[in-house]
Length: 138
Image 1 (cartoon, helix red, strand yellow):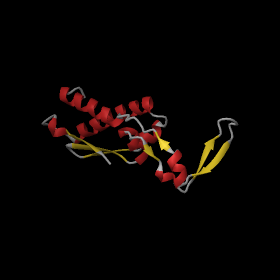
Image 2 (cartoon, rainbow, N blue to C red):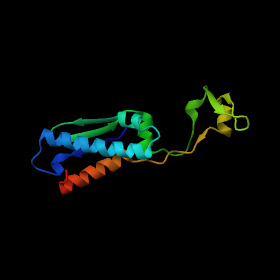
Image 3 (cartoon, rainbow, N blue to C red):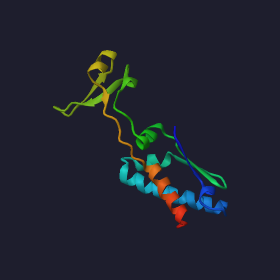
């Protein structure tokens, strides 16, 4: 999985741990705002963000695989991971829930995921924070 890195030495000479924590807090502020705008489950996205701070670096990682795919997006694909599972579905005619077992044969005719457009919540937050660091607006 992707790890985003902000090297504070690239932006300023005088770096303190207090400044690194301030940058981390600003980053979480932007990530939270983006998650509430773009995500159906913003709390899950926010809780999956891990930011480690050292004196001169911040490393940002998404710990939940599903949230990572929301961030970077996916291509359309056959959902082969469903083979052998029983999947609940809504019957459009009756509104009732029915259950279907996914087989290799049924995969040929359906179970196609349309893909996910990248939401770039973390990437955008990193860009905003680094832009602020360049202008020293923190």
